[in-house]
Length: 233
Image 1: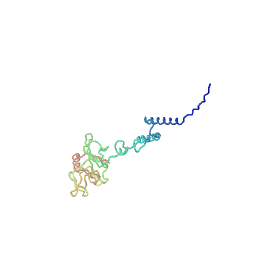
Image 2: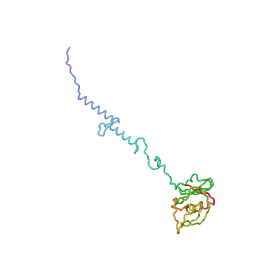
Image 3: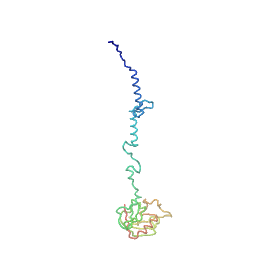
Image 4: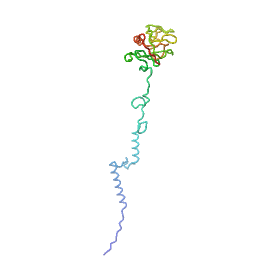
């Protein structure tokens, strides 16, 4: 039996390394093409952790209301849907409030509110307001709240202290000096109205209640002698 000399086989590491590198590159390219592994513009694998962080930041910004915190609706200013509660608490100017004052009596009557500088003509039919309008009452504290009655009427009259002439004077009480207090139109002095109609709603008289001419005529026709007059604060 003859003996053969055994040949030692040496592994070819260089070729194995080259083959392994080729397989790795091919696998990366295939995964990048399917979208499994993101590829950078230069063809190399992108930094996945950085891209995910950027995506998360973008999502948070989109969901966060401007000027607020995530999950909260920002408050809106002014009026309209979503307005703050403060905007719904706006108050009406008392001079523009036309509702009949509470506890102003019943039945046919004239109601005068000193704080609101307004008159109401109320009929006996279910306390229906047939007319309401702004007036100019006294600048002095010479008329106190209470219930009175019309006791005198004059189509033409003259004011005290040379305060001019007036028409449709309907008297219902007297002041501390004994001078009559009632309703009439805006007095005329030296051929001119002593105040404008635009100034109605502001106290400007010596004691009476000044009205537009049309309103003075309406009250004159509405109030025969004995008609109750209710004066409120």
